[in-house]
Picture (cartoon, rainbow, N blue to C red):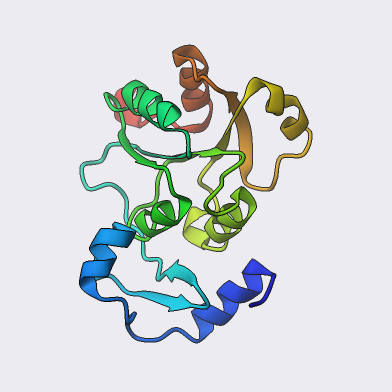
Length: 183
Protein backbone atom coordinates (compact mmCIF):
# COMPACT_ATOMS: atom_id res chain seq x y z
CA UNK A 1 0.00 0.00 0.00
CA UNK A 2 1.30 3.45 -0.88
CA UNK A 3 2.23 5.80 1.97
CA UNK A 4 1.06 9.05 0.37
CA UNK A 5 -2.67 9.40 1.04
CA UNK A 6 -3.11 11.95 -1.76
CA UNK A 7 -1.60 9.55 -4.28
CA UNK A 8 -3.92 6.82 -2.97
CA UNK A 9 -6.96 9.05 -3.36
CA UNK A 10 -5.94 10.14 -6.86
CA UNK A 11 -5.50 6.54 -7.90
CA UNK A 12 -8.78 5.51 -6.31
CA UNK A 13 -10.76 8.38 -7.80
CA UNK A 14 -9.30 7.72 -11.25
CA UNK A 15 -10.02 3.98 -11.17
CA UNK A 16 -13.32 3.91 -9.36
CA UNK A 17 -15.66 0.91 -9.84
CA UNK A 18 -19.37 1.42 -10.41
CA UNK A 19 -20.50 0.14 -7.00
CA UNK A 20 -18.88 -1.33 -3.93
CA UNK A 21 -19.03 -5.05 -3.22
CA UNK A 22 -19.93 -4.36 0.40
CA UNK A 23 -23.23 -6.09 1.25
CA UNK A 24 -26.02 -3.69 2.22
CA UNK A 25 -26.38 -5.24 5.68
CA UNK A 26 -22.66 -4.68 6.35
CA UNK A 27 -22.96 -1.09 5.18
CA UNK A 28 -25.71 -0.26 7.64
CA UNK A 29 -24.30 -2.15 10.58
CA UNK A 30 -20.57 -1.47 10.29
CA UNK A 31 -20.31 1.78 8.41
CA UNK A 32 -23.44 3.67 9.38
CA UNK A 33 -23.74 4.84 5.80
CA UNK A 34 -26.43 4.75 3.18
CA UNK A 35 -26.14 1.39 1.37
CA UNK A 36 -27.53 2.95 -1.81
CA UNK A 37 -24.79 5.60 -2.10
CA UNK A 38 -21.80 4.91 -4.31
CA UNK A 39 -18.66 4.07 -2.37
CA UNK A 40 -15.64 2.03 -3.22
CA UNK A 41 -13.08 -0.03 -1.33
CA UNK A 42 -9.41 -0.51 -2.11
CA UNK A 43 -6.55 -1.87 0.02
CA UNK A 44 -8.56 -1.59 3.26
CA UNK A 45 -9.21 2.09 2.64
CA UNK A 46 -12.79 3.14 2.06
CA UNK A 47 -13.38 6.45 0.32
CA UNK A 48 -16.68 8.12 -0.45
CA UNK A 49 -17.78 9.19 -3.89
CA UNK A 50 -18.35 12.72 -2.65
CA UNK A 51 -21.40 14.59 -3.84
CA UNK A 52 -22.41 16.49 -0.69
CA UNK A 53 -25.44 18.65 -0.17
CA UNK A 54 -26.23 21.21 2.49
CA UNK A 55 -28.58 20.39 5.37
CA UNK A 56 -32.16 19.97 4.15
CA UNK A 57 -33.73 22.09 6.89
CA UNK A 58 -31.35 25.04 6.43
CA UNK A 59 -29.74 24.82 9.88
CA UNK A 60 -25.98 25.05 10.13
CA UNK A 61 -24.29 21.64 10.40
CA UNK A 62 -21.46 20.92 12.83
CA UNK A 63 -19.49 17.67 12.90
CA UNK A 64 -17.57 16.58 16.01
CA UNK A 65 -14.97 13.80 15.72
CA UNK A 66 -13.47 12.64 19.01
CA UNK A 67 -12.78 9.31 20.70
CA UNK A 68 -13.64 10.80 24.11
CA UNK A 69 -17.34 10.19 24.78
CA UNK A 70 -17.64 12.85 27.48
CA UNK A 71 -16.43 15.49 24.99
CA UNK A 72 -18.88 14.24 22.37
CA UNK A 73 -21.77 14.39 24.84
CA UNK A 74 -20.85 17.86 26.07
CA UNK A 75 -20.48 19.25 22.54
CA UNK A 76 -23.84 17.79 21.52
CA UNK A 77 -25.53 19.32 24.58
CA UNK A 78 -24.01 22.76 23.87
CA UNK A 79 -24.71 22.78 20.14
CA UNK A 80 -27.95 20.88 19.47
CA UNK A 81 -30.30 23.79 20.22
CA UNK A 82 -29.00 25.97 17.38
CA UNK A 83 -27.27 23.54 15.01
CA UNK A 84 -27.61 20.14 13.39
CA UNK A 85 -24.88 18.26 15.27
CA UNK A 86 -23.37 14.98 14.15
CA UNK A 87 -20.94 13.33 16.56
CA UNK A 88 -18.52 10.53 15.69
CA UNK A 89 -16.19 8.50 17.87
CA UNK A 90 -14.70 6.94 14.73
CA UNK A 91 -13.25 9.17 11.96
CA UNK A 92 -14.12 6.58 9.27
CA UNK A 93 -17.80 6.96 10.09
CA UNK A 94 -17.41 10.75 9.93
CA UNK A 95 -15.92 10.45 6.43
CA UNK A 96 -18.92 8.36 5.35
CA UNK A 97 -21.28 10.97 6.76
CA UNK A 98 -19.43 13.71 4.91
CA UNK A 99 -20.24 11.84 1.69
CA UNK A 100 -23.69 13.40 1.85
CA UNK A 101 -23.31 16.65 3.80
CA UNK A 102 -21.00 19.65 3.75
CA UNK A 103 -20.82 20.88 7.36
CA UNK A 104 -20.30 24.48 8.34
CA UNK A 105 -17.61 23.51 10.87
CA UNK A 106 -15.72 20.43 12.04
CA UNK A 107 -14.35 19.92 15.55
CA UNK A 108 -11.75 17.16 15.66
CA UNK A 109 -9.60 15.57 18.35
CA UNK A 110 -5.95 16.43 17.71
CA UNK A 111 -4.92 12.84 18.59
CA UNK A 112 -7.31 10.25 17.15
CA UNK A 113 -6.64 6.54 17.69
CA UNK A 114 -8.65 4.53 15.12
CA UNK A 115 -7.37 6.52 12.14
CA UNK A 116 -4.67 9.11 12.73
CA UNK A 117 -5.66 12.75 12.78
CA UNK A 118 -3.20 13.46 9.95
CA UNK A 119 -4.72 10.79 7.70
CA UNK A 120 -8.25 12.01 8.52
CA UNK A 121 -7.26 15.61 7.68
CA UNK A 122 -5.61 14.48 4.44
CA UNK A 123 -8.77 12.69 3.35
CA UNK A 124 -11.02 15.63 4.26
CA UNK A 125 -8.80 18.11 2.43
CA UNK A 126 -8.61 15.91 -0.68
CA UNK A 127 -12.23 16.79 -1.50
CA UNK A 128 -12.67 20.27 -2.93
CA UNK A 129 -16.14 20.60 -1.38
CA UNK A 130 -14.63 20.43 2.13
CA UNK A 131 -11.56 22.63 1.62
CA UNK A 132 -13.22 25.79 2.98
CA UNK A 133 -14.83 24.11 5.98
CA UNK A 134 -13.07 25.36 9.14
CA UNK A 135 -11.61 22.64 11.33
CA UNK A 136 -11.05 23.29 15.04
CA UNK A 137 -8.80 20.96 17.04
CA UNK A 138 -9.99 19.69 20.42
CA UNK A 139 -6.97 19.41 22.74
CA UNK A 140 -6.03 18.96 26.35
CA UNK A 141 -4.65 22.18 27.89
CA UNK A 142 -1.23 20.51 28.24
CA UNK A 143 -1.18 19.72 24.48
CA UNK A 144 -2.44 23.07 23.26
CA UNK A 145 0.80 25.10 23.36
CA UNK A 146 2.78 22.47 21.45
CA UNK A 147 0.09 22.08 18.78
CA UNK A 148 -0.61 25.80 18.36
CA UNK A 149 2.84 26.47 16.92
CA UNK A 150 2.41 23.90 14.13
CA UNK A 151 -1.25 23.78 13.07
CA UNK A 152 -1.67 21.78 9.86
CA UNK A 153 -3.24 23.34 6.79
CA UNK A 154 -7.00 23.59 7.17
CA UNK A 155 -7.01 23.65 10.96
CA UNK A 156 -7.91 27.20 11.90
CA UNK A 157 -7.92 27.08 15.71
CA UNK A 158 -7.75 25.01 18.90
CA UNK A 159 -10.22 24.74 21.76
CA UNK A 160 -9.27 23.25 25.13
CA UNK A 161 -11.05 20.36 26.80
CA UNK A 162 -13.19 20.31 28.76
CA UNK A 163 -14.95 22.67 26.39
CA UNK A 164 -16.57 25.67 28.01
CA UNK A 165 -19.73 27.21 26.59
CA UNK A 166 -18.09 30.64 26.31
CA UNK A 167 -15.02 29.39 24.39
CA UNK A 168 -17.25 27.35 22.11
CA UNK A 169 -19.47 30.36 21.36
CA UNK A 170 -16.42 32.49 20.52
CA UNK A 171 -15.29 29.83 18.01
CA UNK A 172 -18.73 29.65 16.44
CA UNK A 173 -18.98 33.44 16.18
CA UNK A 174 -15.50 33.64 14.64
CA UNK A 175 -15.83 30.95 11.98
CA UNK A 176 -19.49 30.52 11.10
CA UNK A 177 -20.92 33.50 9.21
CA UNK A 178 -24.31 34.78 10.38
CA UNK A 179 -27.17 34.53 7.92
CA UNK A 180 -28.64 37.80 6.71
CA UNK A 181 -32.05 36.85 8.19
CA UNK A 182 -30.61 36.35 11.69
CA UNK A 183 -29.18 39.89 11.94
